[in-house]
Image (cartoon, rainbow, N blue to C red):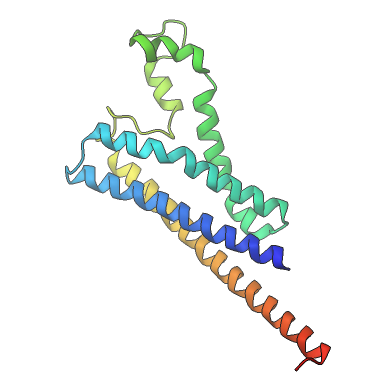
Length: 180
């Protein structure tokens, strides 16, 4: 039972991290809306935390699967699939097809068009498109923040339940042993 308490403590830390990642992205988007930050800084800040957010969320989902906690796993599985699909679609064209575009700013003739390339990298914020997509990005981040808050509530409930049951079990063993 102690391993389950450790699981929920780990899930608690991961849920706080996910809420922090989403809140940070939402604050950065609000700063851009009020012109406190330029689009390049915004995109570099948000793009730096997108992949770690995906990794924490995917790890938490896999952890729930491996420990047979079906409700949190089934709750997180669709968004994990969505994140995986967003991330792998950006890698489907491969690094070599966009290498000339990255290094020399030369358009790739045989690779995907620049529009298709940006469409497949939807998990990243594009500097040139951010003002057009600002409201959509904010709504997307608000929905993710609400989802992560619901996960946080579930994790807190299970953490407290597990801790109380563990303490009650220890008290029962102490009473049976006749020490007190």
